Image (cartoon, rainbow, N blue to C red; front, side, top):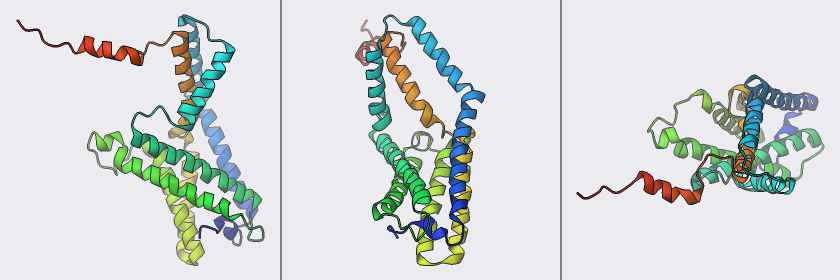
Length: 261
């Protein structure tokens, strides 16, 4: 199973051009949805205004070299290692989901466009990357959904309670869960159930990539910009957030011991 390219097997019943066209449409939906989110919700304008406000309030200039250094630190800490999460469990779950999703997406595109038929077998490491990436997403995503979510852990709500903010993670988990089941059934030769889960896979994947304007999908593009802006504000002195070194003083000032009279 882990060495089988499910999209190549699918090409025996659906032309590779149709599969490739679907993947392109999903890419366009993500790009279009993100642009819609930027302009309709004025996200870009919000960041621009905050950037201008930061420059006006700054007490020192951040030079080009320092800006590059801040960008590199942001890419490494917040981008590659998810350093913004204080909770170790939340951080691990996020990294599993993020890197698994990247592996899944990249291997999907390569297999669909470079190895579209059984006559062009994909390398074993590539198919293993697809299955492994999907399993990483499911491990991190289900761990987050059932054991880490604030409204479940802290507020005691049911893990099956759904709100619009859950659209991204739910559609992601359903898409990859049904995708793996479809690939397994296809490898075992169960035609009826294979077709059922293929339809579920297509439906949930379309919802995942088509719901960008209403889900948190586009937030993955905003987070690096917000993290960089925060670092720049701390560097130029315009940040109004207390520094870690000030926190003991703040705690002492707001938690004074009662006086003995």
